[in-house]
Length: 279
Length: 131
Image 1 (cartoon, helix red, strand yellow):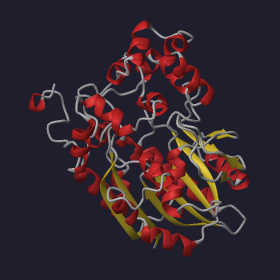
Image 2 (cartoon, helix red, strand yellow):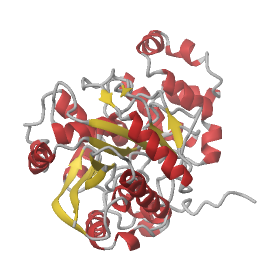
Image 3 (cartoon, chains in turn blue, red):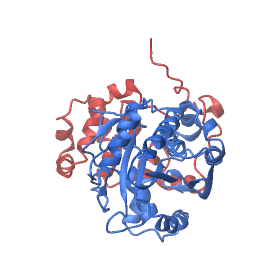
Image 4 (cartoon, chains in turn brown, cyan):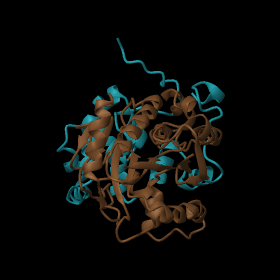
């Protein structure tokens, strides 16, 4: 049977992708950011996941205002890196897992989470930057990836509670897939940041540290934070943190924290990263 | 019943809700078109002519020509759509964010290096005369 072995959370700042693509990772500004992923790269090389269920948000790349799905699951066998205005990132195409993705869609829809099924979609920095942070710059990504896009662009995004419960449904779905697969669930985006208006540059380290603490020990309570608290406390784009709760909901109630990293700044953003294992 | 908007008292922040999305629909769809290299080239060759192909208001077109991101946001632009404009210009997210705060890019970068903008006094309008 397929099993979820671990959860990973990480920010997906586009400037981090640019630093990797332009060979700037050793520069003094960037070196401390990448040092926070040294452990993670070694860990994932040992773990060898077969599939990553990667929760991210599309940044007006695949989805314009023509269509704004709240939860969209990528069921294709391949996804190309998106051209976000400066040409596509020079990273490998993403190989999907259509059978598992379709099984998850069927299972969670019958479990009352009405997903949008996507069969053609380019993937932007929200999905590719976490892969680069964890795997570096391989010729091909070493595992399959199921892209799962959450709307956090058009208000209102789904609530933290809804995301957490969706994670629980995702767990039930993956647990019932016949093939023997090592599956990781990743939640990406955040931490505190605001990219727009005169309040741009907002960082709330206290909020972020509390979020990281509660993600491990009080995920249930954390999932009840209302949208307005994220926006007021963690910035208009800090709302991306609800996506981490899908990852957390897919894990056991009790987890071991294998790794935690927090750094300010990467461009406009506080970088947070954790690895959690079911205990 | 009007939409419930608990976020209107946050200073310096525009939430991209359904009303803003309607207002900015054509502006944001113009931005999406810049994801194609051939459209970026046509836009750069004659910005005004390219903008005139879109059903945007004159205000929106002027704000784009002037790269006035705060004004574009007030006219319904969403930052992730507007990012296609400054990316086409070869400029970073940090550059664009700095222009919206009234700081120079260097001042803004230094603020970020020293921990970013504090939430203290920036949670609600009227705190610390921020309104």
